[in-house]
Length: 96
Image (cartoon, rainbow, N blue to C red; front, side):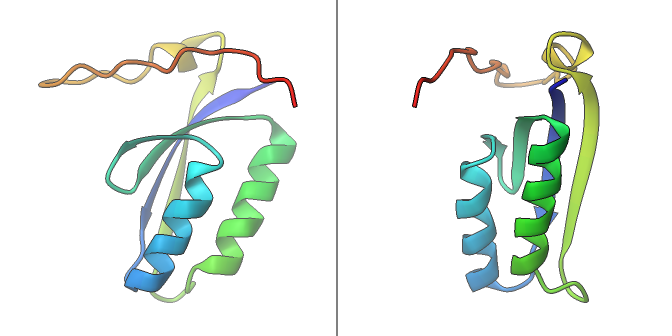
């Protein structure tokens, strides 16, 4: 089952910050500075955490993973905004 996660990071070094940003673009939707919305299954979550773990400095940086529920359930409507409206990405199948 796919879960929706909000992933937020605070990386103190600009080189590592750019690397984390590029990595995260491959995993989810960039919704704000250092914040991504990701739809992941259990294997993908483990893989993403491993890749991030290899990039960050564990004594200086922090990455938060917030599970907001199943993609087809609560996860699809959990993000609310004030000001500019948040528009959830259109889910489409990608054939590789």
